[in-house]
Length: 604
Image (tube, rainbow, N blue to C red; front, top):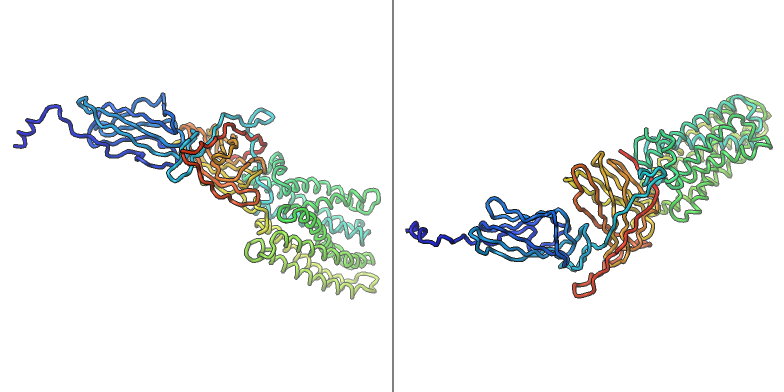
């Protein structure tokens, strides 16, 4: 019976075909353009045709070709090799049945929030507006040789610290403090000092230590600010990058130059008491010690902080350097009246030096930490340093009291007195060395009251990863406020053969501002950092980051992310209500600002 009915059916009858599913689905809201459109039918169809408009304009791709039909005749696929514009996309489709009769037809729509191909005039169902803007090709700023290999800059030297940097900083500061304190004591109370061969050898040994420590400090710091290995900092050309690493970086270069110049004084220490050479002989080590005070230049009351840093460094050097000279040279054994005068003279100058060290230290504590001494690592290390300074002060006052009692009427320095005072001042010097080590450790912490751009460092945006091209990178921006900012791009993959890397910063919709386009001169894994303040962000609101690049595997898939720019006071603006389609369309930027800042790139 069934077979009879089938045989009786008309030969041209076809199974009914309806649309079962689509990708994107009808009414979908997408964060980025889809790579393809698929239509799945319940039965075979033939000769499909698809038309699409996005943001009111026809979407045409000359290289796209006709929609493809699966072998079973049920799935229609349209590949999108060029991303459609952001906005509302309307799709209409028509088909035939295998026998040539009209098949199913219909329409669907979906919404694309963001796209590298910009210019939407529509809003999402929730009222948000797609990213808008226009861009034109730009050229990276070229170097003197016409290349773009040097178009990004280094980190701020105040934001980096590692083991090698700490060791170099401590050795350099230790040596400078001893040299300066020794010169001051010689000028004030021990003019006979340069006549002692032990004193001359001591000063020259300390200078060698200072020079080695300063070179290590500069090498390690230049490698750190470029985020490279320590070996990369051995090249003197890399040291010049410190000139772009803020005042702490420039101070490191100045310190190296002044340490070398101090060798002229150490070679003949009598120059510090010779009236014809005394001024430059004292000025050189003085300026060298002052560079120590530029380690922290930001924060509240910055000018006061710089002055306090200078005073703190100089006073500390007079105190600590004088103690070391007494323990290692003056009190090395018994001697005549000049040794007694040296000890007594140090007692006179150490009191004011200690007072200035403590007062200037309290100023810096107030500026950088305030009352938050236990909530952050910087404050806790500072408390520990303060404890050791207090112990050093107690030991020092005890040593001076003993010296005053034993040397009040002594015509010379006896062996028992020299031995007892040497142990007392030696203990003070050892504690001072611990204090210097803690001071170096403090540089690895960010003070609670540090300025926002120093405290936050680079706020990392979610990584940009594209499996097709093999690109893996991240973009960071600081301080993400209206005004001057800094951009960092770190490429993890590919290791080489990367081309056309461009970062674009698209302003908030309706702002009327231009897109900021920045070509990144990296050809593979490495870091590129703009100069501090070279990235202009003129308005607050939600900005969009867009990244494009090419590898041998192909072009990076269109990808972008958003980030928020606060106003100049650090306040995040309240999002504005986007206009509805019945309102006037938002004006898109029509120009592109190409940032032409100089900088350096770090491979690896």
